[in-house]
Amino acid sequence: MGNLIIYKLSKKNRYLEEIANLLVNNNSTFFGDFSKEKVTRRLEYEVNSKDYIHYIARVNKEPVGFLFVKIRMLNRDYELMVYVKSGQRKKGIASSLIKRAICDAKKNGEEEVCGYIDPTNEISKSLAKKMGFSIDDKIYPFRDGYRASMNL
Image 1 (tube, rainbow, N blue to C red):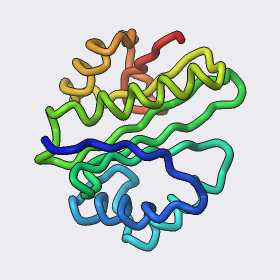
Image 2: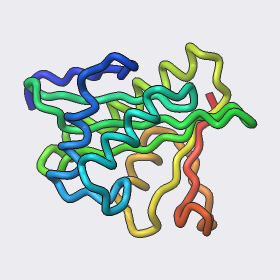
Image 3: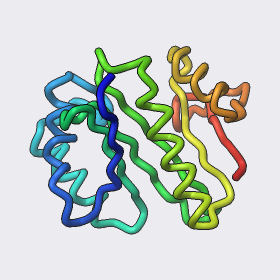
């Protein structure tokens, strides 16, 4: 696979445009049908917010995936959203990103990490189970997916 490096993004990080390019150039619907400018603006907002943490995965200097963490202040849990570029999947990138976020969440004293999995995404469901997440049986309509969670 090459050399996988995971960076935690900060306000002064130069990788925001790379993430926007990754999403737009790969026709991802992660943020909906947005232009590069809209995706970049949303990323800038999130990186400057204390409610989000972002990670980017690079292989041989090429951005291949990212993970967003939304910190939910009421229950103090981390909501994970992960994306890996097609052609780079099934190489351990998503699990490496998730492991990094879990490690940081534990260091920060968080109690839980969670995410919502599209009901048709069996690969994500399988990965979550393999990593030790419990998956609810019901679909959450406001999230249109199953809730996968892990107590830390």
